[in-house]
Image 1: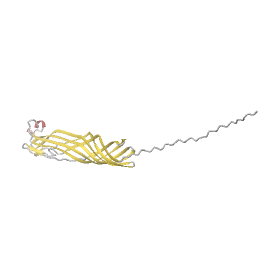
Image 2: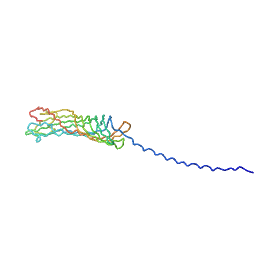
Image 3: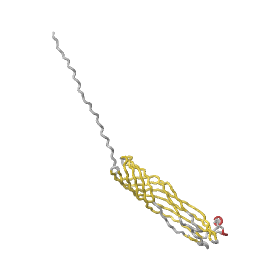
Image 4: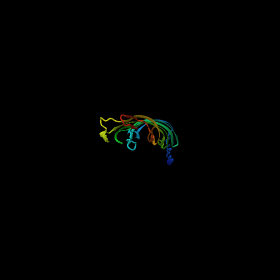
Length: 268
């Protein structure tokens, strides 16, 4: 008897495959920024305006008196540090070199900040053999109506989208003012020097000095400041800025119209 011999084949061993190495993500490239080019925009905010006014020389004195000895001028001065809303446009151009941005900018802003004062007073003036009372009425105002500037800007990028900068240049302002003075000299009867006795509804002044003037000037000054600007959307930027501007001091000179109505003359 014979039977076929059956040989079992050994199962093939599975091939080992090397696992693929995980792919490394390409390093993220920092987004570039471009701050070069023109810029047009608008600004608004608060302007704290310091107005000062000093009037040093309006008076009326009787004949025989001496200014600074027997006759004194009445001081008149005031100041105001008012906050005003300001708004206006600006244009500029800048160039970027690496992290540095330089440029030039011009702006114009409207504001309306006015300081004023009205004052009334009386002063006794003694002259040999007579006593007088002078009444003084003052009013004055100073107003800043607008300003503008042409400035350089230099800044550094703290991020590709944020700029810290300083700025400075020449500034211009429209400053107007007014001044009015009315001085009346009264002769006191009976040697009295009391304003209540000398100045009554029926009293007549022996001399007057008056003036009323207005002016408007364009002043040139300087401005410096610093700010922060950031990109809020493509082609759109926002900024916050502080600047100090100084237009200096200046003097206006006006004459007084003097009128003598009695036997006592006046010097003004």
